[in-house]
Every structure is written in structure tokens, then in C-alpha cells.
Image (cartoon, helix red, strand yellow):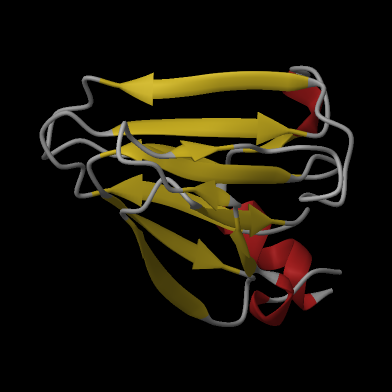
Length: 135
């Protein structure tokens, strides 16, 4: 069972150049094989995304542009992480509830996932999620 201490900020290598920076995410950067890539954008500043946990899937979130806040909950405690640098990724293991909020104008959230989409992998009921963490 994952806890908040299992959540990590991953440094994504940055190659600095006068023509602009370049960052690369390769298989040795994250502890899973990437099976799905998606991104969130044009999220209104007063909206939130997420509102779920994954049973089997791990994810790496990266703020490619702008900033947003990720509220993380392991069923016992919560913490908030602000993502605002494209060379930092937030590694979220299985069993962690997440909500993304406070999106800045132009924010883009890239998500690298360890598995393809499966509705059965989502825990979407927060009360049930909390209950599962106490048993």
C-alpha cells in the first residue's frame, strides 16, 4: 500500500542551450514502462481535474507550461505539491488519491502512465477510497 512518502519529485535532465532548453524522459528516469501519454490543457483556473486514485497504475505528471497544484491523499494524510517546472516530474504510485487544481493560464500537464486506460483501475468514490485505507 502506497503512502505519501512514496511520492517523489523526479529530476528530468535539462540540456541548457542559448537556443532554448531541451529535456528528455527516457526509460531510466521513471520506474515503469510508459504505456499511455496524455495531457491536460485549457483548464479553467477555477476547475479541478483528477478526483480519483489508481489501483494498479502509476503516473508521472509534468508541468510542461505554466503551473498547477496537485493535492495528494493516501487515506491517512494529505499534502500539496506545486508543479511549475518542465524539468521536474511528480511520480504518483498506485493507491494515491489526486486532485489537480489552481491551473495558471496556459498551463499544460503532461501525464506518463504505466498502463493503458481501464475504467476498472479507477477509484472514483472518495468515501470508498478512505474506507479501503482503514481496512
